[in-house]
Length: 327
Ligand SMILES: Nc1ncnc2c1ncn2[C@@H]1O[C@H](COP(=O)(O)OP(=O)(O)OP(=O)(O)O)[C@@H](O)[C@H]1O
Ligand SMILES: O=P(O)(O)OC[C@H]1O[C@](O)(CO)[C@@H](O)[C@@H]1O
Ligand SMILES: [Mg+2]
Picture 1 (cartoon, helix red, strand yellow):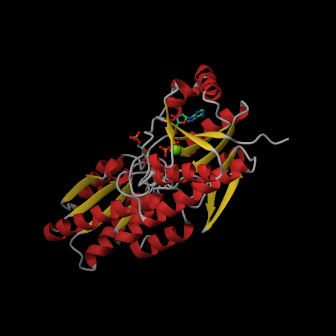
Picture 2 (cartoon, helix red, strand yellow; picture 1 turned 135 degrees about the vertical axis):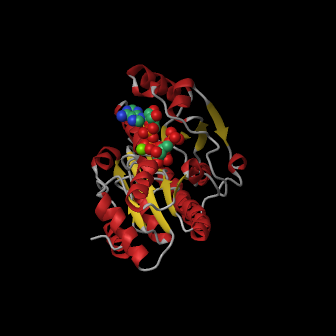
Picture 3 (cartoon, protein in one colour; picture 1 turned 30 degrees about the vertical axis):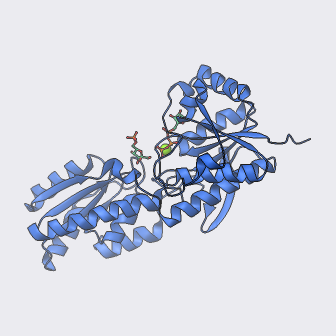
């Protein structure tokens, strides 16, 4: 017979993302609606190992949807990757009487959830990362806000680059994934966009678009570089300067992209995903990741989800190449 779920734990892990708070609120409110108690585990797996928790009530998550960051704090825990760390995490779950866990984070967080599922715990993952690099889901919480934050700064940079007829090299986040760079690059009308998924051909991907743009009469340029591109923004700027003598400036947007109030898109995605996570648990499901397939909410087995591969959006990539004139 199915074990009924009476008390669950929720935590955020890995890099934070705008909308994580809205997901926490949704998990708590949905759980309470279904007669399930909810406990917040603070600082991701670190908190699970150390029994760092806070009871969550209807009132304690009030007003959370509009707040950036995560009220449960986030962390990366090396200890959890060891057998001893995982045993301590399982012991904490038993001590707190948790029937299930909801983890909000990226692929690493899901790998952690899988190890807990293999030890008999009921777990559900919610994709929360600005990188949008969860293969099973077309969308991850925080991506839209991060892209909008980056775009706002780039628009401002453009003003000063135009005044001084300079070339701006802007590094956006994405250690392994170029989704933010590509999306923001298309949205800001970049001269060129460089992503880690594609080995950079300086002549074809960078110098040619700059030269073409110059010949067309342009006197300022906007180059978007994903953090994971070999050499990073400074190397790209150096190459541009050597090849073109343009007055080049580097801006690394960094962690500013992870902050701020979530956009409508992120609040809605987070709220629906939180609801889906609790609904799955209440139906007796475990070891699932809540995901989006276009505008629909779906779920996958965590192990299967982790085997999937997500490339860049081909349509956006094609449009970017057409608009920057890359062959
Ligand atoms: N293979 C693994 N086995 C067990 N636990 C893992 C594993 N990989 C990651 N974790 C746990 O999950 C935590 C978060 O993982 P990671 O730092 O990769 O971030 P993430 O969830 O992928 O988010 P993001 O990449 O968006 O910052 C790690 O600090 C670790 O505690
Ligand atoms: O907070 P940290 O550890 O500097 O994380 C930075 C990384 O986190 C991410 O933003 C994902 O959350 C990556 O794009 C970036 O490389
Ligand atoms: Mg990750």
